[in-house]
Length: 210
Image 1 (cartoon, rainbow, N blue to C red):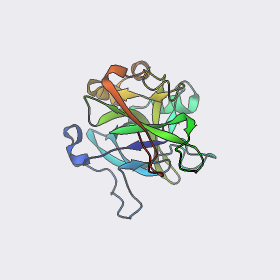
Image 2 (cartoon, rainbow, N blue to C red):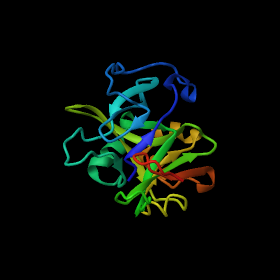
Image 3 (cartoon, helix red, strand yellow):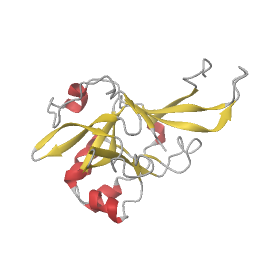
């Protein structure tokens, strides 16, 4: 479920934000916020005090304490997730330009190599950069975040029938960050498929793509 995503663009220009940064941006060559992968570091937006700004966190809300990165959260009624959902200070939004799901079936590309799954990339037509609901918490290895998922809409369902990321309308960002538990639960819903586009399958490790 959505373990690949992208955010193209400069954070200082997104959503009219200021360049407030709560933690120093990494200066090493492994920091690539435009290509999001599990346990990779990315920019998220959150509130601290009365300030709304950027932070840099790892895409694993458990900070490596599980057998696999905890990148997505679905059941907000579970005690460990409800604790985060109830606290506005632990909510964040994740800016994306695309998110990826892999095709259910493998494709034979006719190049005498083993078949492989293709990447399907989803975007929002009227929002070049869209907001995804998220949670974060401090861990022993640093701050980590997860994206909140919901039921898949009719565009995503043929590729990934179980879930999709929770995309927020711009008018819902403040509610997600500041609202009550019941209010944020009401935002955990599929995004309008008519406002979305999909491209693929693409096979970045091979030449053929459609």
